[in-house]
Length: 295
Image (cartoon, rainbow, N blue to C red; front, side, top):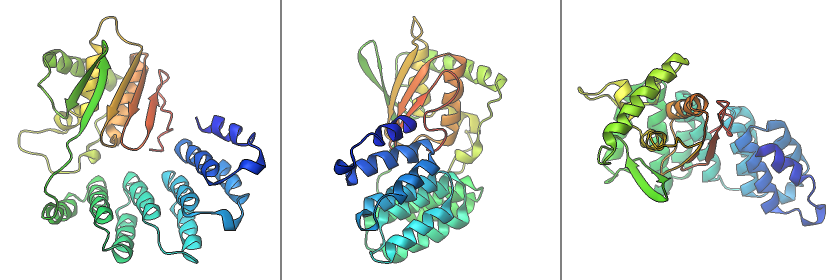
């Protein structure tokens, strides 16, 4: 609720404005794409009160809407008197992935390696983002090379899972899960949804598949099996059909699932709330998401 957050911020007495208040409102601006509002608020913060967290939030604000030059200016300003900050570079790298900008992603990754080579919990996720960017941009071979090197240092991969509550019981779905007693009905509902959404202009976005397909796989079979889709479909086969669905996912929602969920909310006239690893998405019956696609 970015606009509401900004309105509330302007009511805060100046004598209690501190880092926490600024970070809250700037985060709201970042997640709602309120660039001008964020810039105006930041300009009023004295330079000696601009902490690393505030700079990071501004970098995130501009990165989310792909204004990378503006984001870089804040990084350069910060680094004039401070050591480089991991969160700032990770924010830019994440957005470069969303923008499918492999060239920028590689440049940012090289700077991360140069500045934070000894920080393992930074290099690993940065490498994953770099590989995903190459895959999204169509360079699957480079993505495969990077992942092969990464697999030699990572022993376990996180499996995508989603949780939802139906009739006061919690249900967990893994990607391509068929262990649920209602799996046949769930996948039948997914097939019905596919036909409905295609009529409304939906097309599977192959670019979000960040690995080579196996011989028995298709673009449709891979994307339609994502865990949040199974959780949503399970809700939709309930009677009466719910007008509000809530899902929690342990990974970040992919761009194709984001488009798919917006259309499901619109065609089925329901509110779908998805809490992924990065933020909360409210998919409204009008076909829009609260993040305004800045995720």
